[in-house]
Length: 268
Image 1 (cartoon, rainbow, N blue to C red):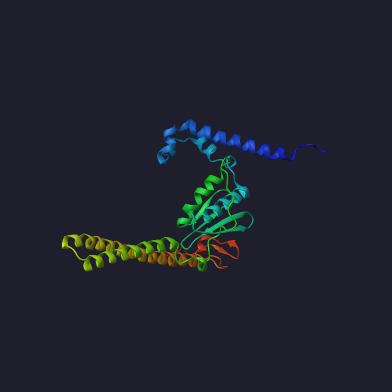
Image 2: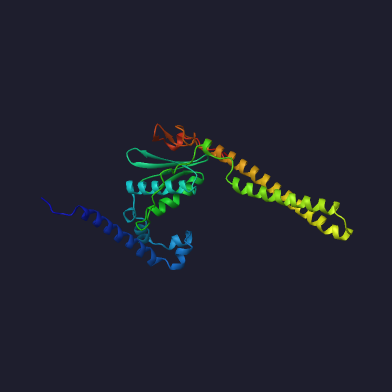
């Protein structure tokens, strides 16, 4: 019977992965200067020799497989919860686990080897998470329980109701003060020059009051339009719905060939 420590296998794997990553970094940095890394482009790619490419892009140097899918899933859930990413996130369990993220205008599929394919801005949002989660030293934060996007019915009309009410109270106070000063200057006795000052100040107060009322009305209208637009995006993305947008290449919980999927039209 073996007396080996169960954790020794995991520690050895982590140590081997760290050595491979160190080899990748040394091989790449040996052929590129520090300035090249800061502005890495096609010209710098030509400088990177065969050894540097093989070491830097060796899959064993980075986290891949189901562990990568688990990490990316948690990272995207956190970003969706903080509204950094607008997407519906699903995990597809086929021969290998995959991640599917889609919105109202595009989708992204994350493969266990770290590859990402899809269309639209979702691909741009997903790729940074995949790159970060493939690194050992990146700590993935746990997402909140209610990380999903809200249903269209849960979106409120506006988010600044308290601020709007405070502005209304201030506008009402300015208008009342301005009206009082104008009436006082009209019906009070005294020289015209003496009555002119409160009359002008009252007019300024009334103009300020009108400006604040217009600002509140515009803010409420803008909030309403934003809420309507957000609800439309949620409906188009089929949030909290058993259906998916037509351009998502998934049928019956399985990926379908790209040729069988119609691309989303621009402007949708």
